Length: 482
Image (cartoon, rainbow, N blue to C red; front, side, top):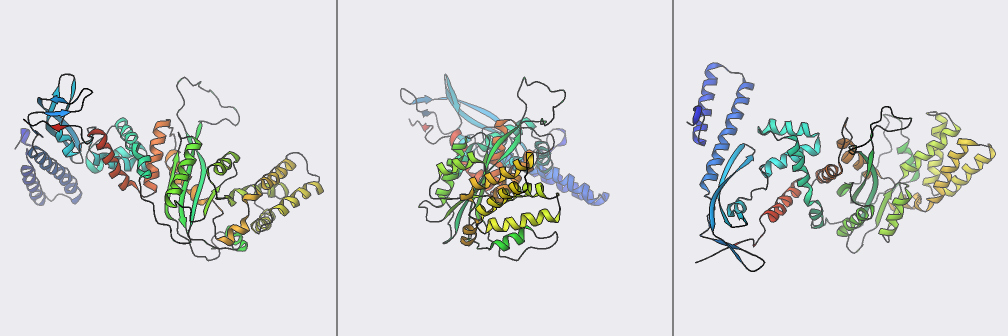
């Protein structure tokens, strides 16, 4: 046994666990106590076995000297010295002793580091992977505690934040090199783009507000751009069916219709990318899936003019659809000008005009609402509300050809990106008291997008490969033979 009676080898730890279990049966320990103690002892058993394996791998001594490229030709590294570094694994801390090759003024190179694919930090890739997975799902404090409970390893919060930032470094290269999914014949390729605010940390030196003025917010939000891209089979619907589903009573199902599954859906967002760069990324993702533009491309957005202008500039031969739910929100505002809120009359008002809009009668709805303002001699805020909505509809009428979209089976609402805004940002970034720095928010957006797109395991393998290439690039050194 080692110092203080603790096991010094994996075999000793195994017999120690055997003795504990034998004693537990004699002392009638409860199952929960046995589980916790067995887990701790079993973890130590594996740690010692792993340490024994690492000791048996040797120190990576490859010969008398190695050479590395230099500005004036190869540089010989012949000063050999053993160095020991600690690595925190799933089972606890282990040490790796490896031979270093150096020369005056040169950083030592350790061939065993590349052979074992050791990370640059003291935490193993597997610890980092589990920590990242927990962090993208919940607050850092909870993630750190969960990793500690399941592995026995307590990672400081600051270290966890650094690990998350570094883990997001290969997001762009991962998706740029990812094989495109096959789009079935006849399917349409859909893109949806929206924005969502993220609460930010106040900058240093910001003036403290004793009491907020009317309408002032407790914290400043910075807008992230959110996108979703997927393919799906066309789903032909009638205006009547859409209205029936939108106005179904609580507990009363809408009309039965087959669900069209979204295929290879990818969601992502960025806080730091410019709008032009982000839109170019959306186009690159859609082009990667359909390089020859052999399928119909549909992009659904809300009515933000700047967003729509960027879509029009970035994309060619694409159908731009104004989100129907955004249209209906404005229609409800008009309904409440003429009828009490939550009244049956207001619902009937919206239902009737929604059916006409879906039937391709946007101009007629606009004309009718304007005539109503004149006939009722509306003025002030009421007239401003109604005329503002009619002007909005008229300006966007080319993107409100819902009768054509429904006949073609194209989507008319941005539920996919709205869901992405909720799942990607709201559920993780807007919990009570959370504030974000730009760098931390961007890293979390990337990793949470990878997770929600179902790509976390594939991304992690790519990240480890890229990180190893940065740490131990191929051709870094060669053996000097006598």
